[in-house]
Image 1 (tube, one colour):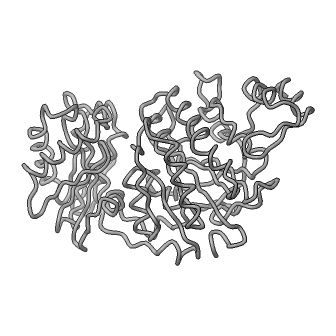
Image 2 (tube, rainbow, N blue to C red):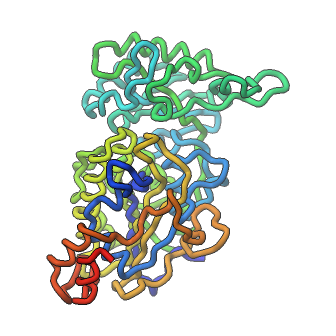
Image 3 (cartoon, helix red, strand yellow):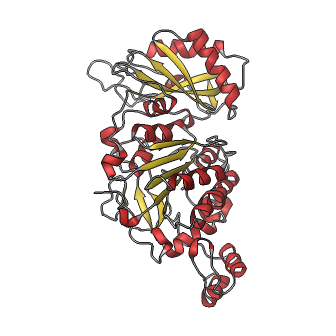
Length: 449
């Protein structure tokens, strides 16, 4: 079944990575999304369709790799082989059938404890210098280091695709990969082990000794070059095979983003992938440039997938103020121009997964979405499959909306912020995105009812 039809014309999928969260005491019991001033999303919520969608299949890690595949309509359980191979596709690294790609984070480890999984959000030029040193000193016919974006880089082990290289189970968990026991789990993402000793999470299993020696040598080689003290290898896998997006859904598509992961998915899916000047994959990204690139792509494609990493970065930092600000900038500088475009594309806004401030890592909770059909008509029509409501909700499909403590993430905002915006708009005045507020609505909003 096509994701969209020609009758639906143009669609924009806007994915503020990790935007979903939970109510926080420091925000008066509101989520960052509720606390943020978001007139564009508010207008969509007034005229469109809202719900919750499960983007991460049961039993799979709640990462942006798995979740963004699901948002695009792929079955992660069928096509996912690991995070790093997706990134390799964008960097331009070809993987043979026996090769393994590993995400190579530049990190800061102090006294054996993971202190910073970004090495202080290392500047791209500094990161490239570090990766160049790694390739010069440690690279070989078997091992290659490739620069990515900031702290997110790549290591390729030619012929190493058979090595599991996994970490041991938690104490008392049983099974260490020995005879009769299950293989130990893979090394975790470094953002999952912040402020923890790293020794128990180092690669184990087949190939683990080689990788541990490599990581120890890297520590010595990059000392003093930057804030990065070490490398962390994780997210390994072999080359995946993805059906072309056009073959899968019957429409053409483009990807606008900064990080290699999302752009790699786009390349493997045969979509146009746009390199956006000023897009950093961090809080300082050029939000407006992404909006302009998306609008340009609308002239050539049916579906434009726009990914913004900033809210996720703030979530990993545990910085609620920066997360609220990132959401506001997504709304004003990315969503605003999309809603103002004269072509009136259909717009779907949803995070790929939550990155709660409290936990500073990804979780697999359902995420909120809001959808407005093309032309901006009332109710906005039904969301495109795979967001057609069904129950129970498999990955990529909407389940029943039953608000609870962790699901009140996109409810209509009431109280001071909404009342202030209503008063500024005036009775019957147009709101961003095509909604209108009547005098009666204004009085109700002003009372916070």
